[in-house]
Image 1 (tube, rainbow, N blue to C red):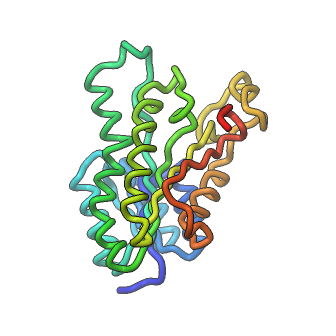
Image 2: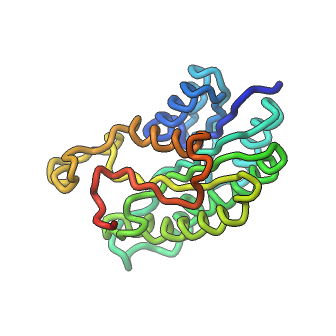
Length: 234
């Protein structure tokens, strides 16, 4: 069965992932969703797509997701790599296992997904991959050490990938959210944000939808901050 546009979204059972799935469905994409909890199955059913229970850290789950999307719909136009949050804690108190788990969760998930979908996107004439990263990727935060370190690496991978496949019209970009309303953001944290509030998950999804769309057809290898002014970098 062929459809006009197909989008894979991971960790799509709630929060930013669910918001991305809903926004892309509004834009005409058939959603193919994954979540560890299985909640993405219900979200996909509500949106007229298909959902699966599985983990972004499991190569077999990712392969099954991509195979199902391609076999069912004949194409994959967009991928949104969203994940949960890696370990936090004192920098030197984080164990080797926690670092390795973080690597699987926020960097190798993107690498593995890219291996799976890139041949499909090249054959069909293009596609777009958007990775949900973090504001702390380039202004490291002691509150989020594993995420800060490994998502800086994600930025490097994204640039290398974008340059390698730009001529095939296959794009990859990162969205760097600050704090969102899917977290419990206290008044002290909100006061540090120039806008004075966390982002709505829908606002993050709007940025993702732009990067996925043809309106961003000349944008690749970029890191788009959507943080309400939280970071200081120019």
